[in-house]
Length: 146
Length: 87
Image 1 (cartoon, rainbow over the protein chains, first blue to last red):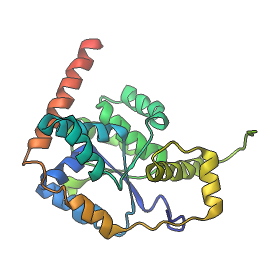
Image 2: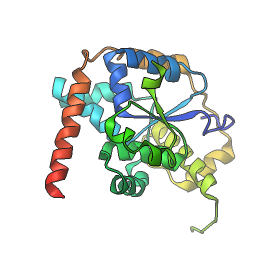
Image 3: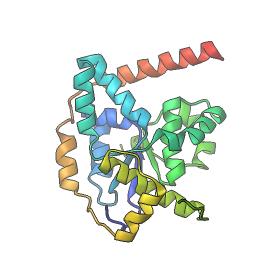
Image 4: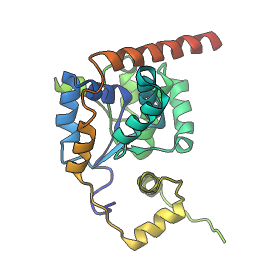
């Protein structure tokens, strides 16, 4: 790991919905790839442990437990999955203060605790609270790059 | 023997980031002590974008259109309904 490049400048949290777009190779997925994965600015891609679980769940429904675990673990091999124990206090506080999903709370908690932006898709729950959430975390919507 | 040191929130966040990176690389929990020792060694492992992209592109399109979105939406809706029943 290089400690020379500024850790914050090169880091971003990726939410589950964005990775699903990439895995579906949708237009949003291609946009995400171009602006975030291929962008030399970013070198550290963080996800919450819930994103890991949600992706495995999606694949598990399609192809079963063992294959799901193998595929998603390989896909995420270069992503940094934050330890749940370091996130739970911020995640529950966010969940308690905003009518958002627990999964979103964990992604937001990663961004909050590391003080780095969160890349996500526009969704009603988040947009309804964007004013207050933006004061805590920088949220980047991939939809805005369309 | 352990001791207590005072560090700023900013430094704590940076150490936490390094711990997460080291945990990912080592596959095990890493302590603040180990993260600081790592910094003393000034070990450098550069990010390899081409390797990173080559790996994840293997999975681009592995899900059919809307397949993942529908399952994720279903999961979130079910979680929300379950939550509503308990509150």
